[in-house]
Image (cartoon, rainbow, N blue to C red):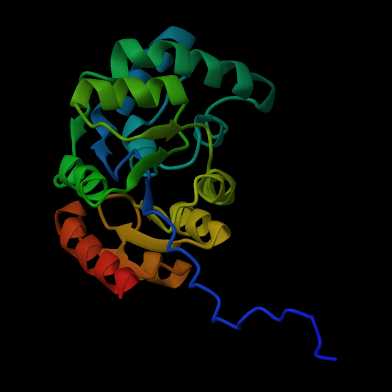
Length: 223
């Protein structure tokens, strides 16, 4: 008797779908030049607390959260409260003086023009980050604040970012923690050699070259 077992035809498995493009950007000294605003906020904090702060030194090492910087100027038991106060006074001093860096708007728009999502993942307090972006007319799809270095990798993974763009070795570490490609720009405190040594996959002078790089990256992904 002929077998009645039905054996489905064997077809090759369909290729796994390509993940939608998601690119993360750092904020300070990647998308915006916040040095004038940060300097103004620290001057106001110094005047209010009576603690002398070398503002030029502060703005030369922007990147980590305020607690890291304030630990150089305040006793350990005052750092947390002083950081809270810094964040509270920041909108009155830090937003208006800060400017957009060359290529920032174009880079965010380039991601979106390709049908992708542009997200900002920053160590800056999220409400203040959103104030900067609104003031300067930069319109990412999502903003995630208060994350530094490897902790950025958590948000980047959650959002499925394939690329993270930043100016600091801490940003490179965040990209690597997420398994994302690290694109570094030399508009912050770290030079190209430092960024490459930290593991950056691509180093650009600034964001003006990013849209062209991204177009090539997406063409390679499509292929």
